[in-house]
Image 1 (cartoon, helix red, strand yellow):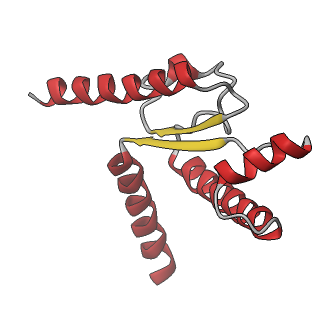
Image 2 (tube, helix red, strand yellow):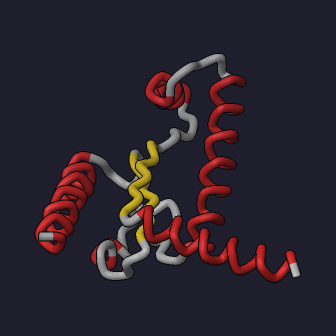
Length: 132
C-alpha cells in the first residue's frame, strides 16, 4: 500500500512540474527541487529552469533555505524600491522600460519528513556530545 501511495505522489509532483515547464520558459520560471531521494528528481538535473542544483542532502536543504530567504529579501527590496507589490506588475513595468524581469520561483519539497528526521538525529547526537 505504501509503495502505491508513493508512486501516486511522484506522478502528481511530476505532473505539476511538467505542466509548469510546458507553460513557462527558464526566463519566467525557476525551480528549487528538494528531496532526500536522489532518484525522484534526477530526470530534471539538466533543466535550465533550476534556480539551484537539485538538493538531496539534509545539510544542503538548510543551506538552500538560506539562499531562498536571501532571494526573497532581495526581491522584496526591489519591489519596495519600485513601489510595486507583485512580481507580475514589476515584470510588466520592466518590459515597458527594457529592464530585467524577475522569474517566479517554485519550491518543491518531497520527503520532507526524511530531511527533518535526519536533522533531529544529528541534533540529538550533538546534544549528547555537548552535555557530557
